[in-house]
Every structure is written in structure tokens, then in C-alpha cells.
Length: 64
Image (cartoon, rainbow, N blue to C red; front, side, top):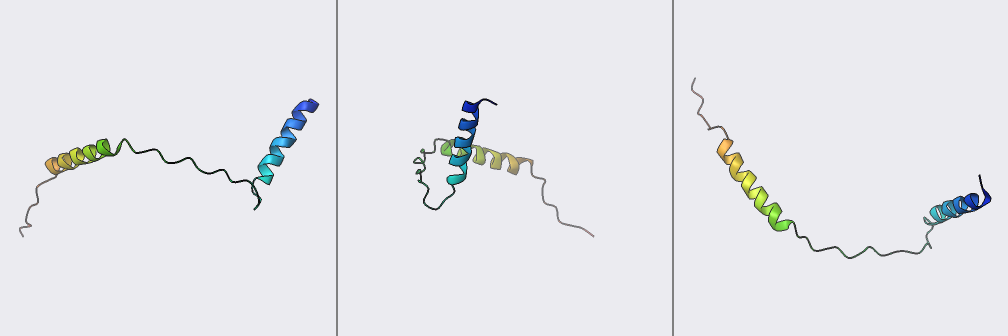
């Protein structure tokens, strides 16, 4: 292994190991993106519900 590769590997390992320390720098999460799929999801759920109502077997009273 080349010396430069060893140095890069050691630095990467140190960065990874030291990132779990209590005083490690914290990178904030990016703000959530607005959901664009909500209307499509709601429409698909309504369509599937109506389809399920159509293919549902009819309820029959038990005759004994």
C-alpha cells in the first residue's frame, strides 16, 4: 500500500471514530421539503377504496 493511501485511510478512520464523541460537531438536518405527493396519494387511496367496495363479496345471512 502506498503511504498516501495509508494516510487517507487513517484520516478517514479517525474522522469516523471521533464523530461519535459527545463534543463532535453537529450538522443540522436540512429542512423538510414540502410534500407534493399528498394529493395523489389521497386520490389513489380513494380509488382503491372504491374498487375494494366493488369487488367485496356480498354479505349473506347464514341459513341453517
